Length: 343
Image 1: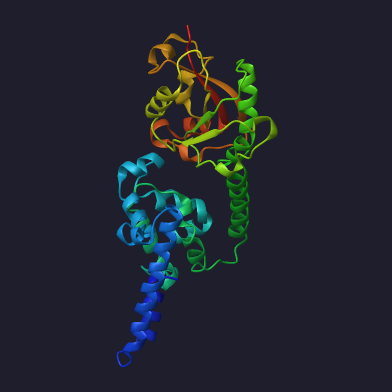
Image 2 (image 1 turned 135 degrees about the vertical axis):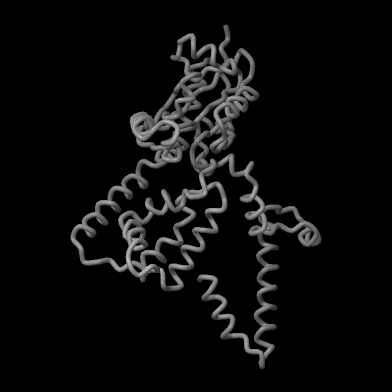
């Protein structure tokens, strides 16, 4: 429900001559707010006492605002320009319908017909508010999609209908199969990858393994089910999100043990990340060796081809052609064993 419709409903239910209705709304609102705070606090801190809930409560909406207004936090997920929602994300979600909306802004009347309702104002105002935060992903705008589509009159045009069908078919295949498509297969194969690599390195016992994920969506931990052959091992999943490459290497350098390797360390990252080329074991050029900031080598153990990292598009830095060659031509998700160069 939009803010304007909520205020309208509140105005209808609250009558100055009947203050009991306002007291009921405020009272029950306060009660359900306390219930939500109590539920969140006990969920995130199960050992919290009843008194501590009032002294140090967890207020999820407030924490969300505080987290998303801190640029250092958002830098972990990736920073975007403030116009990202309007120039890129909405067109990914709406396709030709968004183009029709934009073209209508340059025709008469000045305010197009599709903007003259509460649904459009709610969607546009929400998009403006979300554009304040420097981390912007298309999924944040999903609630705005049905609101905007319900405002646009779909003309009986065969060209538009064909374009609409092609757009949805392509985006459904792209986002449903390829975009971040290797995360679940990689997590399902993780125990087998670790078991095979442990045996190949001659490590008799099955030690605990740390797996760093870089430049991917957050990996689902619950997919790491126990299996008979690796029931004594523990896999620690560490999400590095979208931090800079050198910072990622520093995390690995502080974690990888000295020679000989006794505790395996692994890295899961898109194969389109050219930064990793410097550290791959088959990269033997002098320039690569001299540019390394840590005595680390990456050995690829596994890869999944049906994976596209669309969050790594950098048209401004690399250009359109080079970016597409890198992201599409080198598509895939890889799992590397991280070791020190023991010479």
